[in-house]
Image: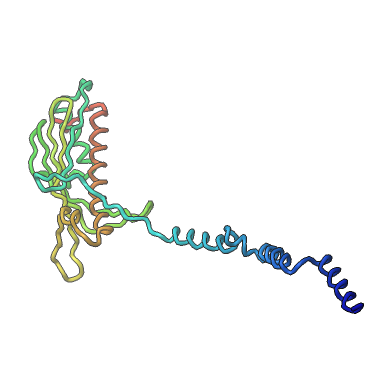
Length: 236
């Protein structure tokens, strides 16, 4: 009996110092979770950080959707068609004959005198300029990169009235130059390029080249209208 009492006394002292088994399991589990970081991983620790990095890489790889270029289209004519009026009501020297000569002088400078004469289909003094134009098809590949790919054909019509003129561009076509022994020219109208379902990232470059050509000429015509008219010996 004395021995049993002594053993019970020792067990009681150990429980007082270390706590019960139930307390150990609770506090021990909590401490282990904190020290290993498993709890922080669930709340956005190492595991969450790794996931965020992967999603960021996936977003960087994702390609931006391509947006097609759409030129102005006349559904009645079924043609890609640019049309507009350049005018200056306050211009005192912008008579029909003055505007006719200014526009003609600008176009001859842009195309070259010999080429301009080849392009003329009809010309009515002070009233009409009708041209069938052929110029190099220049493709813009980047900010500082341009290449030629055949020729660009189009029709340009200018009509003149006092202090204004009307411009029209249409019949755009891409003519590929003969290759090697093949002497046949391939001519593709831009309406076909506008409607293709495949490869349009390439064909859109031809439509954009034509659009750039039109805008450059319209800007030149606007500048020629505002410039002072200085007649010379050839203007008669």
